[in-house]
Image 1: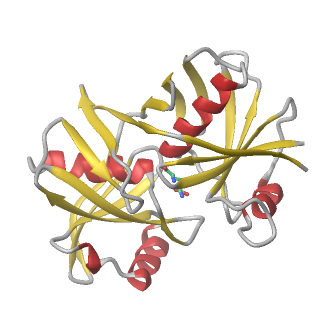
Image 2: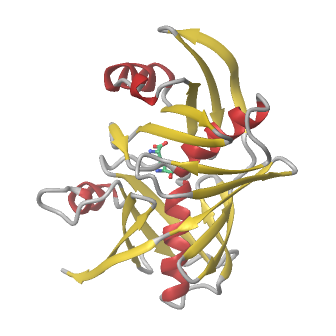
Image 3: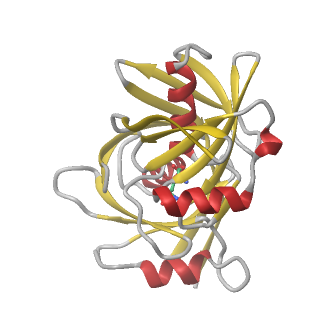
Length: 245
Ligand SMILES: N[C@@H](CCC[C@H](N)C(=O)O)C(=O)O
C-alpha cells in the first residue's frame, strides 16, 4: 500500500486511496502513531463516490472518526488533484456534507459547511466561551494572552462539551489561535475548523473584518473569509513524503 504524508499548516495527515469502503479506525491508530507508525494527527482515506469526485473517510489519530477537518480537506484536495482523482476545482463528500475545494499549485481553498452556533455565550472556569459547529464542534474563548491556554482546562472542557477547544487572541486585526483537538487529545499545530470558529466569533464581535489572516500555533498564514454566511479557508499545503509499506 502507498501512503502519502501531508502537512496543512502543521496539522498532519496520512492519506491513501482505495476502492474499499470500510472502517479504517485500526489503521488510523497504527499509521498515525508517531513512534511506530508514519505519525500524524489524522488519517484520510479517499474512496469512489457516484455523486461527487470522491468521498473521504476521516479519522483522528486515536481512531475516532470526525465529520469534518478543515486542514484535512485542503491536504486531501491537493492529494486528489495530484493523483488524478479529481479536477483542480472539485467537490467531495464528507460526514458534514459536500465540500468544495480549489487547488492552485500548493495553495488550496476550501468552502466550509454553513456554521451553526450551538451556545452563544457562557461563562465557565473564568473564561467566556462560545460553542459553534463549523463541521465539528468548537469552543472558542478570546483572550489577551495566548499563554492562558491550559491543557488540563482544555481536556476538561473537551469532555464536558464533546468539542475541540480554542484560545484566540486578536492582534492588529489578525487572529492568533491555539487549539486542543478532540481525538488527538492535545494541542495540534493548526486546526482549520477551529480557526474558522475563532474567525466567526471575532467577526461577530466586530473585532475583525470579513477577510482576515489567521495564524495557528505553527505560525503559518491562512486567509479566512466570510461571504453570505459561508466561510472560505485558504492556505498552503505540503506533500511531506510518499512511502510504500
Ligand atoms: N484538525 C481538524 C479537525 C479534526 C477533527 C477534530 N479533531 C474532531 O474530532 O472534532 C481541522 O483542521 O479542522
